[in-house]
Amino acid sequence: MLTPLPPAALLPVYATMPVRPVSGRGSWLIDEDGREWLDAYGGHAVASSGHSHPRVVEAIARQAATLLFYSTAVRLPQREALAEALVARCPSPLARVFFSNSGAEANENALNLARRATGRRLIVTLQGGWHGRTAATLALCDGSRYEQGAERAGVALSRRVPFDDIAALDTAIDADVAAVMIEPVQGMAGARAVSREFLAAARSWCSARGAALIFDEVQCGVGRSGAFTAAEVYGVVPDLLTLAKGLGAGLPIGATIATEAITSGIAVGDLGSTFGGGPVPCAAALANLEVIESEALIQNAQTIGAWLRERAVSIGLPHPDGLGLLVGVRLPQLASQVQSSLFEKRVLTGTSSDPHVMRWMPPLSFSAAEAGLLIDSLQEVLNA
Image 1 (cartoon, rainbow, N blue to C red):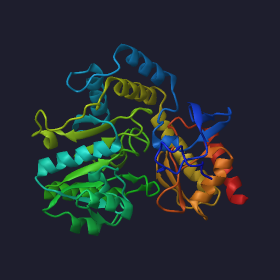
Image 2: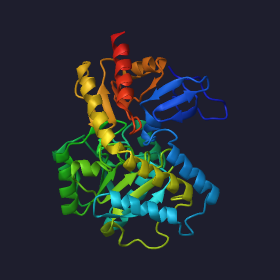
Image 3: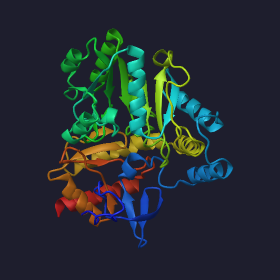
Image 4: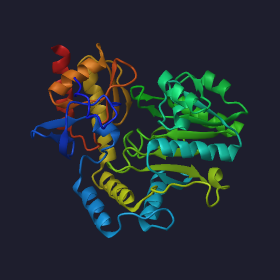
């Protein structure tokens, strides 16, 4: 069940959900008629600390009233504080931060840094990967519509290897490869978690063959995988790591975090972003990180994510995938059909490029009671 087409002023490029929210709190949206909707979609994994958390809202309002914006032509304490906070939370030797406005921008800057550092151009990615909609990142995404967009822009496609295929990865990383870019948990493909053995092999071969290893944690980072970064869960550290969706608690911000070795040749003017690291998004992100830490939301993601997987199995859905609160469940019927039936119960979930896999990516504050409501609603739909 989808909503009617938007007004003519908007391009009709989104398959929208049948809710028009006017407010939100925690894991709930409130629509124009005052009805509550359980949000297990999280605005596409964005609402990490929940909708309109009071501490985040207060930080945004305070910062907006003090200094709404100034560009990267000046130093801003909020930008510097957020960079330090991210480095403190990421595994060493990730130590240098560049801010942008989205996950695609964060990924594109990671590609730029990797190519500058290695002097090479070719990128290796995984089948099923999704990395953004700029020309450079479209070239890394699976699917003909994305590849055609890159080709129209004259951008060479990445070299694809099958998901989790260690032997194919070994063959793919040669002297032409600038970087291997991997989502440790593939979001669009259905919350598919890559194996530790695959990531460890990627780390070893990139180091030995002079290529950079990039983790795209735009969707699976900022606590969603059960640690601040999925790199920590796997115990494998890349040369570059990107964050975005859950970082700003709803405000647009992206971060490319790299090692000193990758960034040692960077000089003034080599990268740039007018809005990257603006004071209001940085204030929101700092407050968001404080909420995630003070309310133990990463531990909650571990606990509730594990419970959801166990309950999915108990109602007959085998082998749930993903990490933490990025969960993929394989359904006996089309995920879009089940999603539509859940909409009728005012429960929001995501689908994926696999037509039988539903994605759950709720706020990290998702409670046991809310998780139970999600499972109960799903069971009712499946048994109908």
